[in-house]
Amino acid sequence: MPGYYVVVAGREVVVRASGDGRVTGSVAIPVPAGTPLSEVGGKPFGSADGRHFVVVVSRGGDLPGVADVTLFRLTVSPGGQPGGLALLDFDSRGEPVAGAALSPDGKMLALSLVHEFPPGSPVYGSVEVITVASGATRTWSGQSAPGYWPGIPSWAGDGTVSVPWWRSPSPGTTIPAEITGIRQLDAAALGGSLAAARLVAFPASVPGLQSAMIAPGGGEIIASSCHAANHTATARVIELSATKGRQVRVLRTQTARFGNDAARRTRSCRRAKCCR
Amino acid sequence: MSTCQVLSVAGNGDQVLVQAFAFGRIDNGDFTPLLGTTPRVLPVSAAW
Image (cartoon, rainbow over all chains, first blue to last red; front, side, top):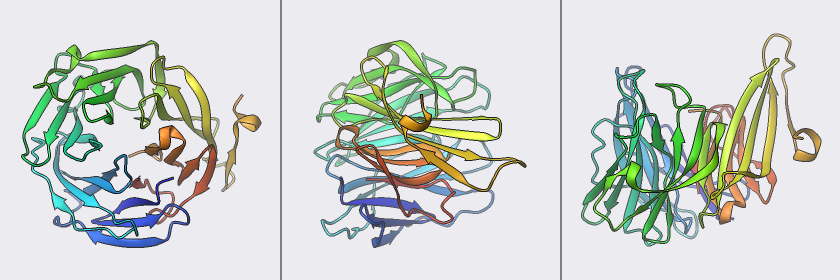
């Protein structure tokens, strides 16, 4: 288990110990404060060594589906102390960044961007691979595949970027959605069409998912779903095969009651008790 | 951001930071609540 995890809380990055959650350090994000009309939020993405992170900071505005994105690199010491946040040369041109992943050697950064504007139009996405030292960027555009978009990227070695290939069940919506397979990009290529990149297609799409990440090594996808019925919401975390899309196991099921007749409690359970 | 999110994955999928209402880690199938932001029901942005 990695020794530390980082949390973005407001305009602060906090490092905590994975064992007990104690704070080992923090660093301020050097961006102006948000306003009610221009909220600021951040999301961290880790790397294989557990010490290098990318923090995606987004500033929204009046237009839904449009965000001003700033990227920072963060290194955490073996003792859990964060270094400074290093600004990365990047321009999202207003498109929200859905995910980021540093290559194992830290020299390249893969980003997934999702184009959701104007609202109601078919969603599509793109993947950008940035050479960290120079800022040189190559783009794989998914504009020719409306209704599909790339999920959070991951690296298979230093040369291949893999992304879950999502599809919307209805125009203009993204969540919940289904994963149809895994797109694999040659990070040394010059970019091009995302729809032309190699696709490991699942025999059947996996529907009803809220989120998904490809595990290090590329053999598994960890995904989540959430359903509500009869005043009960059920969240599930599952492991899928990255080649077939079939469910391998349920990692976690948690239910919560809501509504007027709900008790103020949550109930967690393991597969043997409630997930058959 | 949803309160039902896979936030980060390590170790070939054996270790997962997750928010399934509560925020915590799944370590070889066992869930341990962790501190994130407060109040705990808010979506947490975290990674390892």
